[in-house]
Length: 93
Image (tube, rainbow, N blue to C red; front, top):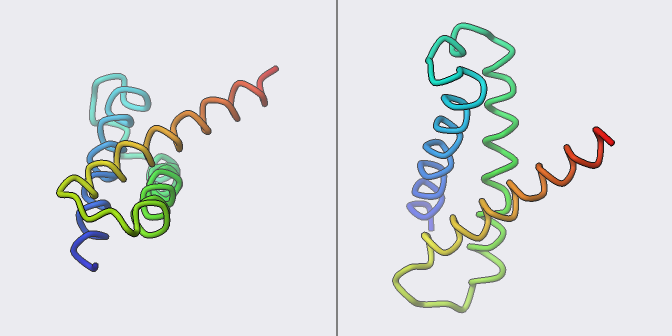
């Protein structure tokens, strides 16, 4: 079980790094110099990891297939990102 959490954390870390490279850094790594960006990075990491862990431990609990981690990462990340987008769109209107 611990290795599953490590795997999901690594996947989430990679996703958040790519998102920050594109969005915060404008295809540059200078965003890493700002402490505020690292705080936001942590928030995004937790927001993306939580649904993945939920799907892995609750929804797919009885699933014994080989793609449980990948399925949890894909569904959890899609749910988290769509929720963030919906919340941002709702707050800006």
